[in-house]
Length: 420
Image 1 (tube, rainbow, N blue to C red):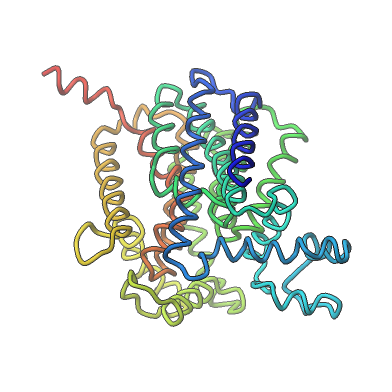
Image 2: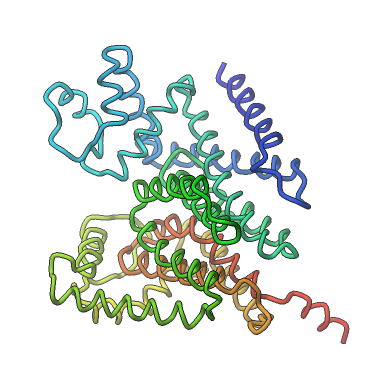
């Protein structure tokens, strides 16, 4: 029975991809998008198999699925309880009438994680409680987010649309980590659609409908991934200003981010309760002291100061962008991640050699992608001591990072080289 329902869902979602205007991209046939979605589904099902095999509880995705089922079961016992658990506030003292239920639901005090459980509870309404259907729905969400990012890049650089398509939809870590009804897949949906809708506001006339659509996605991103939201907003704002005012984007971005860091440093001294560097140090402390596994980095505790964060930034970028390295005693998963990381590094170096920055178009958008991805990589590297977690966290950023390098590269230079 499960196989039949899986096939029916695949047919339904393929039909939507074929018919919905959102997936209509000039010079990119719909069947190609449909094939990319099937590849995404394969990534989601592979995620299930690997997690079921190597994690005793099936991994966090299975935990969200089970917790969502617990909430779903209340629908037939007391529909008001279902509505309150699904749409009401959490991170508060459990109400007496829900206390017994909440005992069986993890992450009640974590807004971000509980949001994923809410989505799984709603998915149980249509999934027939099959874990595979949740994976397919999550794959569709991640696929839609990638489509939004792809349409934005392809709209600005149509001559490189094939490069974007292959990198966005076939990069292994993006394909694997963002396929499933868990944090990365849902976060990529919100992130991709927020950037896509904002791009329409930048290039087209600002309309109330467009603003509302963007606000919906950006607020959802704030709920599911507040740190990503916090790093994205400055980049989007500067993109809009530089584009609309016809400023040179690189000086604008560089000056704004330097001033922003200086402001955070001053605030950390004058208002200790608003010290973001203390927050970073606390997250790092949590990873160093409580996280275990076979792929940890030897990360030391950090002082909650701007100077300590500044000193750690080079190492943070190295850990996020250049690790894991393709040597040492590693299991198969780490070896694959290391090979992918090496490929990214060589590809970025090649694009840099072929770059023609003077003639690059849409520089404001490119600066947005560069500064957003680099600051996100810095945050990951400053806080995380586990290479597996780093590979997972950076997966939703890779389209912006790889897309930036493709956009600045002049691949015609390779053809000219071989002529001689």
